[in-house]
Image 1 (cartoon, one colour):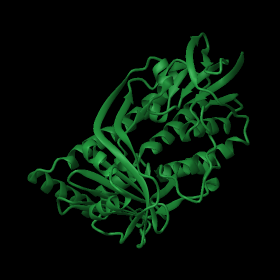
Image 2 (cartoon, helix red, strand yellow):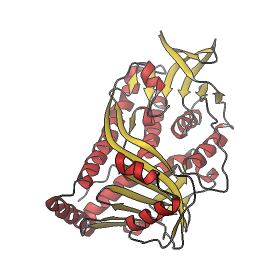
Image 3 (tube, helix red, strand yellow):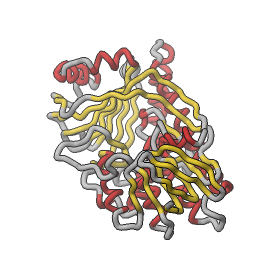
Image 4 (cartoon, one colour):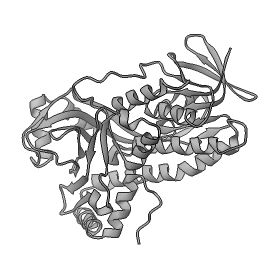
Length: 390
């Protein structure tokens, strides 16, 4: 039976970044369990699953030596939000914070590929298999894989996404909020320039976000209730584009669908415990939120940074519960605050009675016209949770 110090279940962005972060600061023996290809191929066409990487995550990826390996990324310097049913709007600009940018829109596959390239230079071992069972042993876990291999570790990391098998086998309960919505995603091209700006419009029945992948290409994330989502998915590309052009007030000129159109259900999940003795959950396995502000993977990268910090700076045995608890306490507040904020915003913009529409527009304009409050919200999106409004 092969013994490892750390076994990471899940070779996605968060799982690979944790393994890399740990290996750059230690000589631990680390294995990554991933049944799918952890090194996706990039084609000339943009992939439809993208992330808005904030500056804190960029800093982490830079320190890990990954940032310069990411082949395609589009910097955005402004964010504009406007409401269909009120006079409200908010505009964020990197110049307001004396920054060169607010973040970058990057394909998930591009980040994952760069992480794999960096990990290939370390002692990390990849095992192509699925997790079958886990068994608690005195100083860690025994793991059985679907290839009948048995391995052990002192610390087991669940980085296997929202439907985490690790979380399930560990008996960790979780709460859910079903938004009864779907996120519709696709890529588009346009005749106009997206102006290095991310755009978001709140409609009567949905929320549409436009995330630029280049000057004239963008990823669309359209969050809609299930009934509307099914209607949109059933449309031809030509009719879908017409609906999208109307939804964005024809702001981007003539649009064209440049990929398949997909959808996935929107369900917020939060694990009741992030850790057990010799086990920790990170990323979507611990928490996943509404994509309203594009913060999902950024929260996962923040988990990586905090968990690595607690492990490396402890003189206690690897997997010690008190050390893992420090990680859980540090991260839970920020993660749950973001989740509840997204739930509240989704409710606020879903309701369309006249008084609430008026208050909504007033609130947006107050934020837009108050530099300190606006700076606070912008810093939250950038990943700076220490700055408060004055």
